Image (cartoon, rainbow, N blue to C red; front, side, top):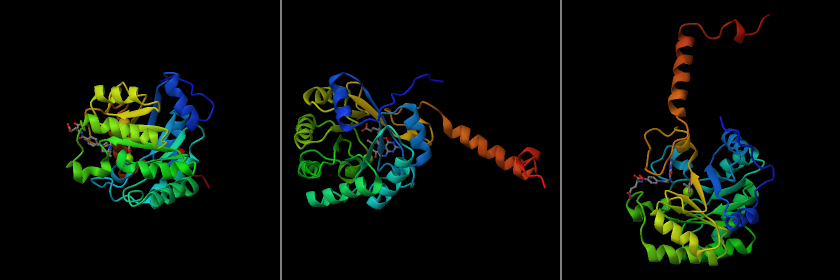
Length: 270
Ligand SMILES: Nc1nc(=O)c2c([nH]1)NC[C@@H]1CN(c3ccc(C(=O)N[C@@H](CCC(=O)O)C(=O)O)cc3)CN21
Ligand SMILES: CC(C)C(=O)C(=O)O
Ligand SMILES: [Mg+2]
């Protein structure tokens, strides 16, 4: 059992940025519902990402491309009700920001206004700079996302480590210049992620990008050992809840079938 007490003050975007200057690492996890969000918030995460990874871990699809903005908003609302302290960042899903900067702003506005997010995240570097700038111009904080961008799965030919150094450095600069407050670096070599982190003033949040990033993010189901056999190199399981849930459900089934549940303690007297 950890004895860590979380700081009482709510996390804000300026605080998130300032953490980098103090050398204070940022701890981010994804969540998609009230109950999980409340557990993470009480454990002291700095930010909760309502990721479009919900397309895979919640909806059971092979990728994230079919997730809609309405679905992201629904999950954001659920998470927001369970959160008091963490910064809430919602992924803009595929095809809700690529068409035009105006489309990006309208989508981001809905995530904030209808979902209750504090910020949005969108994928891409130079190609997304105009969209980022437009969203930021309406005072909506934007987190960038570079490297393995899951919405590019068909171009990349799968979920693969990205190593185009010069392009990634240019992309990070472009995202920072466009006004983003932070950037996710996904599945890039640790040394390159460190170089990118040192080359910009805003915090980098790594996933499969090494310890040189200013913070880390992982998917809820991965950290807790809920997502079956999904075990890429960068995932560390801090618990193995899958077998625990399996066991509990199997014992319940057995007791119901044997007429051992409910017993006297779990029913009402007349
Ligand atoms: N449950 C879950 N966890 C995630 O981290 C995650 C999602 N879903 N869905 C959206 C994306 C997809 N992600 C993925 C998925 C697979 C690999 C993977 O298999 N990587 C290989 C590397 C392959 C290579 O060497 O190029 C690995 O072994 O880590 C990586 C990131 C990360 N995101
Ligand atoms: C893995 C993180 C960075 C993400 O984008 C997601 O969960 O959708
Ligand atoms: Mg995502």
